[in-house]
Amino acid sequence: MKPMASEHALGGQCGKRIVFTTFGSLGDLHPQIALGLELQARGHQVLIATHSVYREMVETEGIGFRSIRPDVEDVGSEAAVMKKIMNQRSGPEFLIRQIVMPHLRESYEDLTAACAGADLLVTNPLTLAGPLVVEKGRQRGLAWASIGIAPLAFTSAFDPPVFAPAPWLIHLKVLGPRFYGALLQAVKGSTWTWLAPWRRLRAEIGLPPNRANPMFDGQFSPHLVLALFSPLLASPQPDWPPNTVMTGFPFYDRSGADKKPDAALETFLNAGEPPIVFTLGSAAVMDAEDFYLQSIGVAQKLGKRALLLIGRDARNRPTKLPEGIAVFEYAPYSRVFPRAVAIVHQGGIGTTAQSLRAGVPMLVVPFGFDQPDNAARVTRLGVARTISRKQ
Image (tube, rainbow, N blue to C red; front, side, top):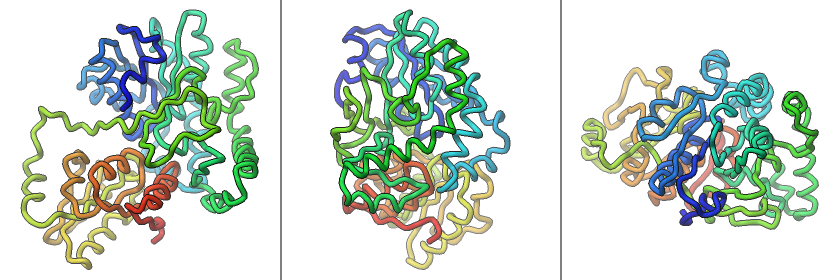
């Protein structure tokens, strides 16, 4: 990570009060914890504002916490909601129109309270209330930085991403950046109707009309944008936001040096040859269907040991385990991946980063959002293969 990148927005001064806000899974939260820990080590006071389910994790690390709506209980059955969110075609629209927008005012109110007395707000993609809070807080000196955790966030016409709802669009990149830039503008324009509640809230809180789409260009601070991924995945492009700083991956996976390894996990890893690790991260794992049963069958057919990381959804737990197959809800990737012979995963940016760090071959089974794009990038690097979820 480039030294002092986050302090650029603070004028190089220490002792500032910094609020991070995020919306989504652990893949969105973990980078902010990593940054928060580093900033606190440099003398800043850090608070993370996000879903209340993450309170214990954040506070255990000694970072301040504020709850931001909506939360799990606000949106209905978690399993049913995640199934709709992970739909490759309709998931993004469902997330914005049915989850984010109905709770936008509550998110704005909670984040405004969290930023009381703060010097800097750092926003994540999908934190659509963030730019509104900054715009209202400018008079009291609230500065703004934003982050993009994966190349997809930057939607470059010079380095076109793979869009989960329409992956075939990537084949049109041969027509050049001028054509693809116009195509991207059409894609962005197609989401404009989703954002009517955002525009109404702007008017209600006394902000002037703004044509910047908060899902795309409008999500980026004009002062500092952190690209939190390796230049191996994507390098800066002419149409990236001004003042973008590439930091590399900020790693965090609840694997503090003072924590003892899980005895059962260590016993399994030490009992034979390196296993194939099968994981679906922290979001797709809630819509796994028969992924883990298929994984067991693949391992048996290959005659390989396998480690299945199944999350907390009881539906993912196999009723019978053949010899050489182990199941755990969670294990720190930084401890497990370097000891694997191969990793089969969903292509989330955090999982992908840990796989690259471990130097282990990957098979990527993307579900939605940034996962198909991440999969395409590591496949182009020659360190992974990709198959569709249906396969």
